[in-house]
Length: 144
Image 1 (cartoon, rainbow, N blue to C red):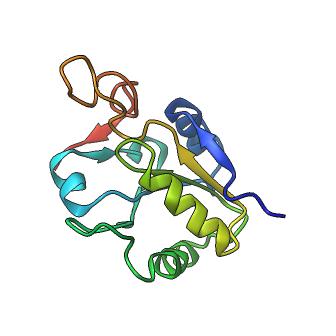
Image 2: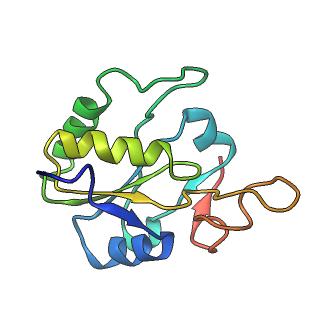
């Protein structure tokens, strides 16, 4: 029986994997608004681009119909097959886990959830981005 997905990885593990493996890919499944106003990982220094694929649009509560097939098409256009390592990122690691499970069900073998996501959990004041996640670890990112 196949696992639901390949597992969780820390943001630092993911960044190192993206640098070391030319076929490893980062897929950001947050919303267009999040990409625009909160920011996205910047992989330009390692010669890569983030694949942007909304898992669900705002204010919808469910995944976009056809998400997995559309993302599969985008990955194939990049020359990636179902054996490439794919790391899924959202705000805190919930939507990205669901996306990793969906892509694994489609036959992709190395779908990983990025634990704590882009912004991670809340700090003592109830804000994200300073306790855990991509931003808090000081990994490269840009804001539109």
